[in-house]
Length: 240
Image 1 (spheres, rainbow, N blue to C red):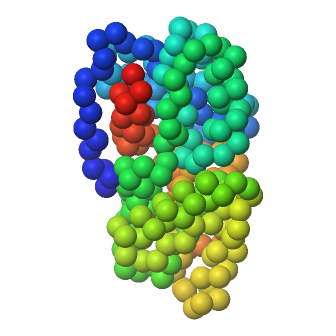
Image 2 (spheres, rainbow, N blue to C red; image 1 turned 45 degrees about the vertical axis):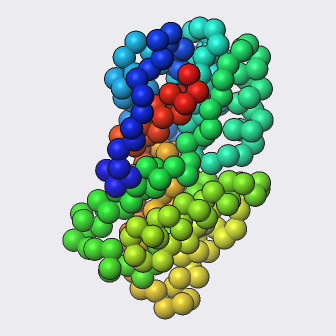
């Protein structure tokens, strides 16, 4: 894994329940993404009850996931801050009762490593190398709020420091430039080989939209990657 291993202490003696909450999508991919992440996390935290749920669109719902026990640690499985992380999720958790909500996941260096892994694997499939690329667009979900845009820009800088070719952040919703605009801008500057790296957690509507970006290379979302479980465990251990 490009991001390197995360070291942590053992789970606390009195285990607090852990609940992973993600956004959810109307168009989930074939792999049960959050369930697999929860399984990976449970394997790393023996003795901890690990539940999972979605803010909207998918089941189990956040409300159902929170019913499993009192005073859990809740990890928002989101790459960026935004309305769901700052407003919706705390409101849902608050209705349940006492709980500790951790930071969301991004832009953790280990997850930037996962994005690099995904694009690197796609280049390898094509018999290409990082040096063959003229530019990379880091495709993030986007937001009208400034904080998640800054986080995506930080992720782009971190990625560029690792791979060599220049990286620019772009957005699928609520931010500028859009991914298609960013690809077109590279093209206008003379770039011939452009890649889109998916700063997304799972398959869904946003990842499907990237297929029409116009780039030569498109990487999949982070998906089922060891870095996700490692970052969740780190968040849990700090909170528990």
